[in-house]
Image (tube, rainbow, N blue to C red; front, top):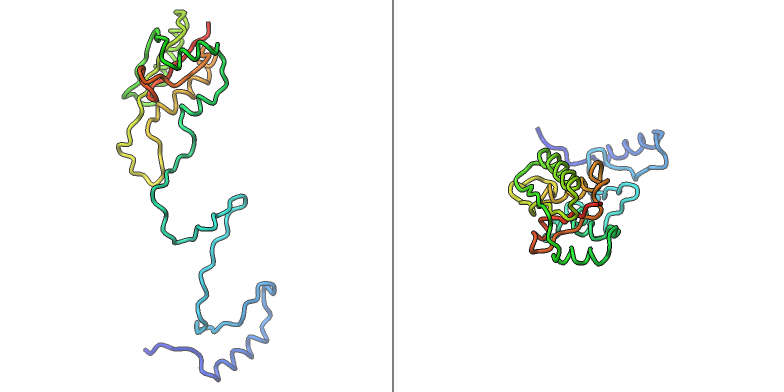
Length: 199
């Protein structure tokens, strides 16, 4: 079977007469007449239109190689978010606490626990410390590990490090927690939190 290479001059003339008698379905989107067997030259592939409210950078082209070395951080680190929170305790006491000059009265180490195990453990610990009249406690979460992070979507190491501040600012702990701050390096640094309790 031989391949067709296009229309003969007679076929082109016949095709143009037939095309003139046809009524277009969408007259606004008329394109120049094309050869039905694909003899017209290929046009460049159209770029997709972005979603409403989302604009593609001018340098981004579909099929282009991605630049390496970029990180995919979707939100600020927990320590940065906590530092941006309003101060709800005495400024002088807060300064001493964040400089590691105050000694925590109790500590809870959540290393190696799952989120399901750590949540109830944290609630019990904080409520117990508050009932005993303690003011400053230390919660150690660890910094997290990237082991096994091979998925297609970026994930942050340290699920506990990201979840503990959220738990401390929601019920039932929000009623007894006055301030949360990242621990000083001598008490665990970014892998631990100072929790200052209300009276």
